[in-house]
Image (cartoon, rainbow over all chains, first blue to last red; front, side, top):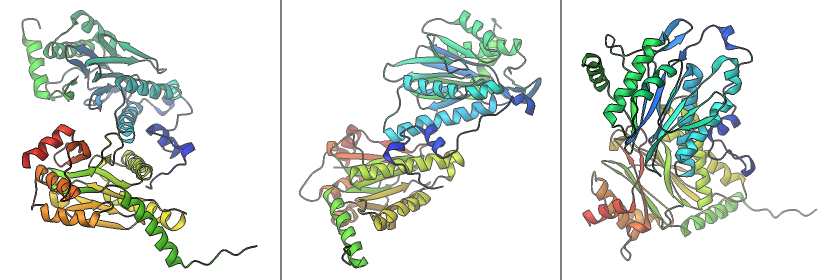
Length: 261
Length: 228
């Protein structure tokens, strides 16, 4: 590795993706449909819900290749930086790469510029990355993320969903993505109220994922036998915090054993 | 065709070194010290937006004195090199020593081949698991690398500041003691420096990932007040 140097005219600025391009490190776009190479792992259901203090993000743990389960404990919800998170659905490989690049992009910008991007700016960055990914999506590698964060300038949680072309849509209350997203969205819609507290919102996210797993074979439900729980995180004034598995196990037990089970 | 005058290489190098040293001496000094909590870097800098101290990577920090645009360009290059290396390999493969060597290459190259040397002195530090594992690489305008132990002083009045720092710094200082010694050394006997004149950052030993943290004026003031 060497220190890259640039003349003023071709300096990539704080853009890490641009820097990668100058170094020839951008991923290549497949020239034909990827299906020719066999089934590849796909990640499925993710949910984001706004609550009183910020946003809850949740994702199941299953990845499927065609009708096979390729991973039982994949993670689909990641911190993007301290104040925001990204959840992914779609082709698992490119999705992971996109998350890694997005995390680096935000950190790189913050370090080069000396201050972090606004939440809006981060959402826009992700939109551009999804759009740049469109040629690969056309070959069967679609990635459709959710982005949510705590807007430190406004003091509220905000969430964004995307389409495969990079279209960015800010949602007020909740958003879902992935094959079980439709079922999860129904559950969230029925249970959502303005200003829910953290516990109620986490339960709602858990219920949404459990319902999605009931209806959609590509979504994995909580697995108490193997101890595999969804990834659920809160993003509030304290930043991104992933919930411990022990808490999720207790909530799952309460949800399934209680009178409303 | 006119022949250029012959100038001895010794003279050329000496002139360049003098030029660089003069440029650096015009700026204010900077101190970095190892403490129990990590590495504290303290610069005399009345501006709160044009930084001398900044983050390169998870456990690596950067500080520069001299010409702002020159060391800032070096800082950005360092961030790029570190992020590219972490992206291509792994985050744990990014280290201060290799970065310092690359900086030395650039500084040495410019010093011998360009019209004008870079009028900067920079410091690349990496916080380790314990105070003995901390690394402080001090780089001079000509590419010389100095592996400092315990503390480093950069800038014009470095010798006098280093002497005062050595006298004031206790063994195994905590953050407050290290900062007070650093500020006292920067100020000298005839001045006092307040939090508004200082830019302070810490690389925190116990941080889970990104160790670099700037201290706000209020926090600096309370640390200076507590021990002083």
